[in-house]
Image 1 (tube, one colour):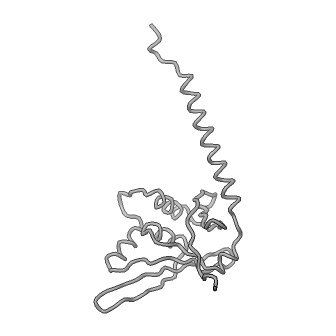
Image 2: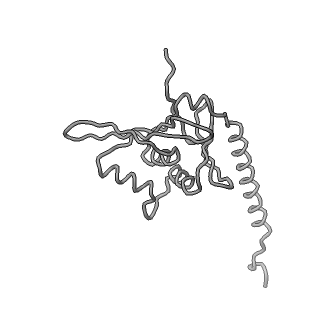
Image 3: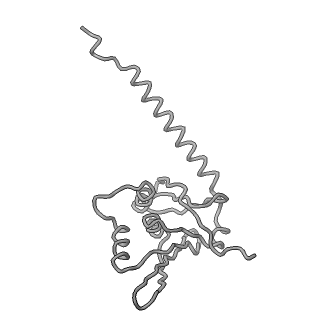
Amino acid sequence: MASPSVLPVTVKGVMPTANGCAIFLGDDAKTFVIYVDHAVGNAIQMSLDGVKKERPLTHDLIGHILTGLGATLEHVVINDVNEGTFYARILLKMKNELGQKIVELDARPSDSTVLALSHKRPILVAKKVYDQVEDMTEILERVLKQQSEAAAESSDDEDDTSDDYDSDDDKK
């Protein structure tokens, strides 16, 4: 049996960096990183968290335009990487009384990821890209562990300060 040419991946983490955000994508076997600017990193995190926005962001507007035109996002594919720059394709399906049309658009993986998350559609990666990228699973696990420990310490510090608080109710 031939191996698949694309593999499904999920967003496993969004981490701020000095110059933007690191988006960790992968499956159970491997994790890889795509670096994006802060704005798109925040949009990805908001999509993951299901944050409701007062006004539509650019990615929301694109989604509304697609809906208005009767197009549905089928999936996105991270299809190439060259010297650390990733490339993606967005596949749209348009159906009307005349028939069905599939449209494939060139896009940045960051924008594609936001759209896929907001439309609850699959994010795929080409096998050639998956095989080429460095496995960052251990780094992601280490960062998540450090964040968890820092959050626990912060929580413990808050508990300690609340215990030290003296109420004025005890004074006469």
